[in-house]
Image 1 (cartoon, helix red, strand yellow):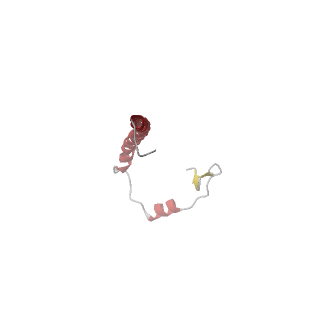
Image 2 (cartoon, rainbow, N blue to C red):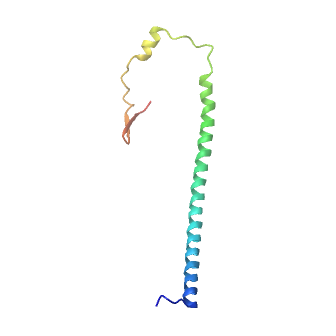
Image 3 (spheres, rainbow, N blue to C red):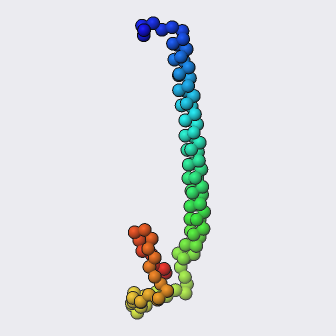
Length: 104
């Protein structure tokens, strides 16, 4: 049975190859659309991060500039800053996943 190929066998093989090719091209197009959407999301996130960093970089540089009215810390002021104060009643810990964040 398989020792002879006729014209219809060759045509069937060509048709199956065309169908497989069309399916491969369709899947490829779907994957490209998905990857393009993913890249667009990444680009948007990158722009948001850049805008956030630029906004707060300006704010942080103002803290980094030396203040002419600032005095050097003394032992008394350092010890006063290190003193432990009891939290006020309105301050409470808020659980978040495996972390506890306390309101500042």
